Picture 1 (tube, rainbow, N blue to C red):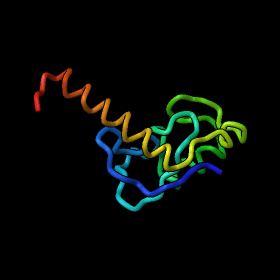
Picture 2: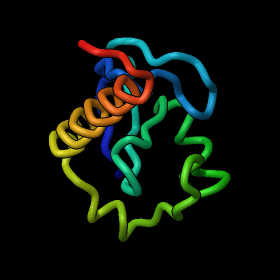
Picture 3: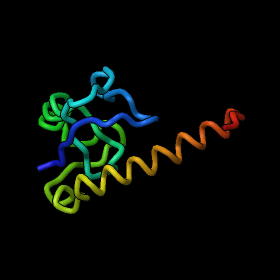
Picture 4: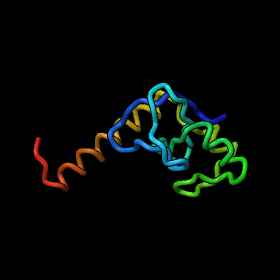
Amino acid sequence: MLPKGLYEPIKTQRNCSICLLPFKRNVQLTYLPCDPRHHFHTYCIEPWLEQDPKCPICKVMITSRNVKQCMSLEEMAAFVREKDNEEYESSISQRGINN
């Protein structure tokens, strides 16, 4: 079973890559084992994986083996927050915005 959790706002990924609608608070998301930043509305990704068991972003095959090796939801959340902060800070510095 893939990890699921409620959406918490982050700075970079704000929309589901399948339906393109924004994530909203307290909506359930499903996180894929290929990359914790690859998360989608549960109601979008479940039918997707039934038709094509590959991540819509990176095309990695989602198998029972890599699902078992998946990080815990808490580890994923920490990873996403860390990467999100790095990407946000990088985008600010690339645009020449100072704090």
